[in-house]
Each structure stands twice: as C-alpha cells, then as structure tokens.
Length: 340
Image (tube, one colour):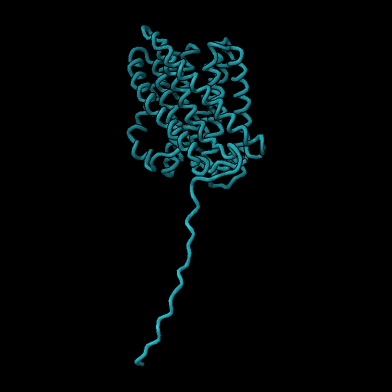
C-alpha cells in the first residue's frame, strides 16, 4: 500500500428542487373556481328548507325566521359562487367539458345546477313566478349536463364506466322540482317526475349494490356513497305532498335505514379524512330530517329534530371548511378543477 494515498475527490452536492406548492397562483380573477363548492351549497339549501318545514309543525311557528334567514344567506352565497364559476365559461366555453373529466367535477357541476332548483324552493313563497322559471331553467340545465356526462362516461375508458352515486344527482335530481311545482299547482308535472325518477333511482340502487359487492370503492371517494340517501328522502317528501302517505312513510324509513348503515360505517366512510367530497354528506342529512317531519308523524318530529340539530352543526362546518380552502387557493388544485 502506498505511503501517500490519493485524496478522495469531493462530490458536488446536487440540487433537488422542492415539489410545486399545492396553492396555485393562476392569473386572473376566479380562473380556477372549483365546482366542488356547490355540494356544500346544496347542503346549506337543504338545511334551510328543513328548518322551514320544522317551523310549520304545530307550536313551532316562532322558529320560522331561522329557516328563512338561512335560506336568504345561502341564496347570496350561491349567487356569489355562481358568478365566480360563470366567469370561467365566459372566458373559455370549453371549460364546461373540461370540468367533467373527473368525478369531483361532475358532482360539482350537477350540484351547481340542482342548487338552482333549490333556490326556486327557497324563493317560492316570495316570488312564485321567478321560482317557476328557475325550476324549468334548472331542469333544462340538468338535462344538458346529464347528456354531457353520459357522453363523457360512454366515450371514456372502460374502467371509468361503472355506476357511481353521482348518477343519482345526474339522472334522478329532477325529483327536487316537485317541491316547488306542487305548491304552485303543477301537480301532474310533479307526478310524472315522481314516477319516472323513481324508476331511475331503483335501477341505480340495484346496480350500485351489485357493483359494491364486487369491489370496494377507494377511500377518497367513499363520502359520495351518502348520496344514495338523498333520493329516498326526497321521494318521501314528494310522496306526502302528492297524497301518497304510505309510500312517503316507506321511503322515509328506507332513508333512515341507509343513514343508520352509513353512521355505523363512519370510520370506513371517512377513512381518508376531511376532503371537499364531504359536501356530499350534507344534503342527505338535511333531506332526511325533512322527510321525517313530513312522513313519519309524531315520531318523525323527534327523529327529524335530532337530524336537524346534527345537520345544523355539520353542514355549517363542511361549508366553512370548503370555502376556507377556496379562499386559501387550495380547493381548485385538490379537486383538479379546470382552468379558464
């Protein structure tokens, strides 16, 4: 071995750049407004409407201002969010198609349209003509969005063609319209919607159950499973309004059974932690409270009151977290919202 070993050459440190930040600075105002805002808006509309129905129960009329105040605030929130999102297609119309590439975008786009129908329910006692116009505008818009989603799913990869809970919003969401149509005297139109959407909901429930038995949905998408409760709760409310109390009671009990099943599976349902998809949990809770008030008599009053108390805290919390994420610039990146 030599007496003077050669020195080990120094190794120059390599530079590894940090990962890109989650918060993106997109140029221009509202260029990445995420549709994921609107499921939580739907939940807040459902909360206000549940409080309105609660206040109609005997002896509870003094609580009427609570529901009206919530609905007024949510109408303003929805109007602001809608203007923010509409700035995207005004810049680049093709952004509407781009929003439908991912499941959160599809759910958000349908929730955006259904919130228009819910706004009609909120406005019906004050502006019935405007409410009727909003209902029909919402149904036409839902048909267009549904056709686009059908095209995207049908032309996409085979593994993406499975049944999802968002199908209920897309193809059964018309059942929201009778809540405004019936009080305004459009009984036959509401009756047609009721029976047609029921066929669609049953088909989606059966297909979803068979698919669930074959494979477990990934943890991040599990909150969407709660959407399965919404059609049952809405069928219960509309059935009572149409004069079918037994059908209404049956659907209300079905909604409660589904709610209990999901409550018992809460750790599985929320395994991935909080995400914007928690907005899908909000409307089913409020809609089931309303269904209990309308369809289950005295027992339903107590059950609905408990659900309404839970929804009053939970829906507000989810909406606050979702809008805080948007304000911080994170929500668009988290949900892969399209950029105008």
